[in-house]
Image 1 (cartoon, protein in one colour):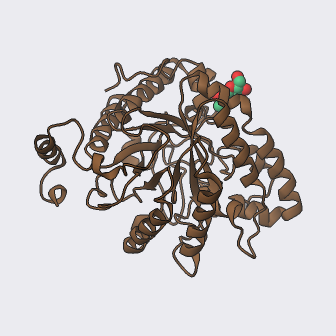
Image 2 (cartoon, protein in one colour):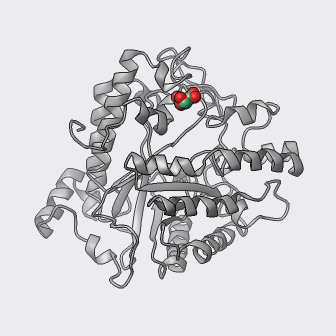
Length: 417
Ligand SMILES: *[C@@H]1O[C@H](CO)[C@@H](O)[C@H](O)[C@H]1NC(C)=O
């Protein structure tokens, strides 16, 4: 109520006066006392990376897998459909076996990371009859949890693709229409989450489970989405995990009126400044102030709030970032679903190689932007970078960005915002 009638800053001030502490009311009451969570949410900051492109393929993260297929292969669904189960099985198992290995976890621990978010598709948990997808990633998830445990890293298991696709993005498994919530898809989603709960919620290293990644609120019935969140929460509420829900693109401050009487809720918001023309036109100073203002708005929420995806990128130039064959808004080559774009700057030769290949200005600006975002998100409860590694998108490659000195070591909020 408060948030709709007065400005966000004023609302935050009202809450601060009311409760006389640094974070708004509600945070304490949401934590169930007898519920031993495995991470000090709200105390210690989450500092994590996503293991993107491992169990849910994305053409821009591993272009080599897609370059070895015809142009109609645009996501994991069409890859499996086109190659057939036997060949898809061979290629995917080779990928699962090599993309992330235990030494990645020791390296993550070595640079101070305390969390990994691991995207997985429903088809790896509970396959649907008739799907072309192949099985096996769920076993590798188990391996990953063991490695995380060996190196003292907590895991968020993130249900990244649900039946019918919750957002139409290739990273849901199937690019195109948003058909989630139709037919039995919500029940199938809850079943997958219950299996993840039964198999993994009791593990010492599994500190969080995310109900569904990026449901496309503006295209879905939000009453249905909220009901799903509440029902799925109910199924997980006796587990000792933070029950993580994405803001459904409804705005990071739009969930304060929701969730009363519920506990262990962790709000996940994703912050990118590259998927619309006006953000792409910002200079470095405006990118920094936009991120810092976003971090401030995260910190006024009455729930633990993290930026569960973000990047060092200030353009969308990485090859196939918007989908195989789609182009970039930055250089005006984007064309998708009847929407085009106009030229802002040149992508050629930029941001398509390695971190080591950045020019001096890009090196400095990307480092400044990363530093600012760490400070911004640590005003709230922390961050999980997208992504740990990839084949050819340097601004999205946390491992290499850190090695090249573009991430403060040790992690620090100094000089950030
Ligand atoms: C990351 O670093 C490795 C090892 O130096 C290198 O082979 C790879 O090309 C780099 N990738 C990017 C995107 O920077």
